[in-house]
Length: 256
Image 1 (spheres, rainbow, N blue to C red):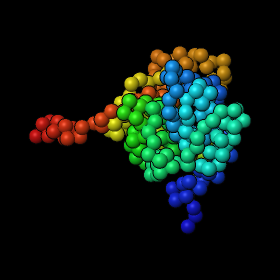
Image 2 (image 1 turned 90 degrees about the horizontal axis):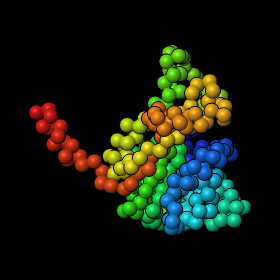
Image 3 (image 1 turned 180 degrees about the vertical axis):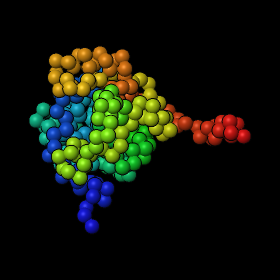
């Protein structure tokens, strides 16, 4: 039987470590600006890739741990930090099922940027992420939007067009699943993460999305229609999960 992404998950992610991940410097600077200023924080950059965000956060004075499932990426992150002249810690970590490398630590701030869509069990990953937060900790999560405007337009124009994903040139990423705004927020609430705010990103328009001159327009549109943006960016705090006993009681009253 051939190896698959599911059966050899870690191996294939490490083999794909040569693919550049953090190429948008303006986006990375924006992400780093979301970290509260004023005092150094214990920060976990979960799914750090090459460590570009980790370096920016360390430059702001935070104590940064860069975690990833790929040894190749962690080596890059360490190298980038050394080249830049900042200090970060690294941890080989699978957020879905193995947090041992973090030695029971908790963090004031966790960045989880473009990770959820890659996980086999994203809700398990979110539960583990919550366990890594201090009681007053904050999580910042970024993930593609399944209800992005450009995607809706594509499905409307090309109503029956499909791609053959067994052809390598058609597989542009390793995404297992995506969320829209409502589904993401509900999933977060189920595990005990309350969304404090959705942060505007970009709402790209078909055919002109490649032109950087339109980026200010895309950002303005995202501020008007955040749930149709290309990506979802949420700031969450640790709270109690949805009370399922209370939920069952509600359903009992409704259906009996």
